Length: 401
Ligand SMILES: *Cc1c(COP(=O)(O)O)cnc(C)c1O
Image (cartoon, protein in one colour):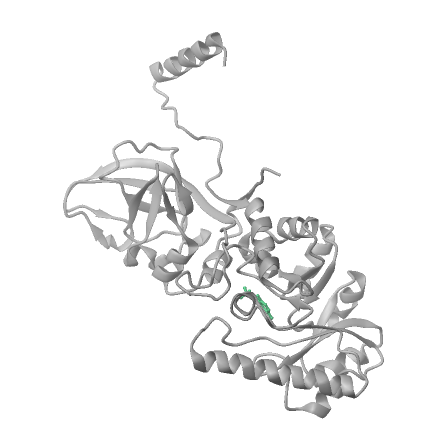
């Protein structure tokens, strides 16, 4: 910067200071925002591909707005990285992706009601057949539909139970159903306990045996898939045509203290940030926030921060030792979490000013707070923490490529 410009800035600052306006370090940011690092998404994709057999392709799970990351930007980035299969929970999510120009196969993992079946054709989508009656209903629609058949191998949630062989075979015989895939879902792939590992083997065997029967009957199964993130990370040797990672693509495990067998280095894609809006002192004996649940035991310096439970900050966080980062240091959340605001103790941080960036999830200097830490303190999993980030939190894409 030229000296004259620099001097100009000093002069401007001095002028502002002299008329009593306090300058802040950041004024251009939104109230609460999430930074979505797409380079880290690329990295996680290549890590998962490295772990999987080369014949297994990724079906990226982008339901729930890609776990809060923004499904359109995530799907488009993954498509650019060679991913050609996507999965969502419901027709509305799938239609929204198509309307924004997302290409590739899109599988709807859940049930689609009869009055929305026309949209399967209109948006060129692939529908899960959730059991034998569902197959009849889809057949009765009277138009060709692309489907994957779901087999329940022990999760007891969705799919035709694996033991109903005849009913399963019937699902493949409907003239209007173009079967492009057959899949199941593992219930305990996250666990390395011997009983759980053995249950995963049981599920896998049920699936493989059934696939053999279907083929023996001369019926095409289409692409086979079983594994979500933990299935990939703990059972990478399974042979399948597709694998369906969600949380691992976003750079996290569901529980950050889980141990997994695959040697992967995952990088969190999302950071969650807000701003300091006020700095104040409360005297010993004074309370902060709703219900007066926090009472200062000594004179306490506090900062108000522009994010609350409507933005996805779990309300229990302040009772369980939740913290944020300001200027690279930890500050404890105090008092009840409000809908749009939280209050933090900054007594030991001398230099905090309104406008300072506050990190709720992510890195600041040498410190970081993971979605895993928040999940642990809130008694839930990282998937839930990410999906709970509110729609009014703006998403900003970060990428050097
Ligand atoms: C959500 C979901 C996934 C992805 O699960 P992660 O644990 O996030 O990898 C895969 N398959 C099905 C059927 C799902 O519902």
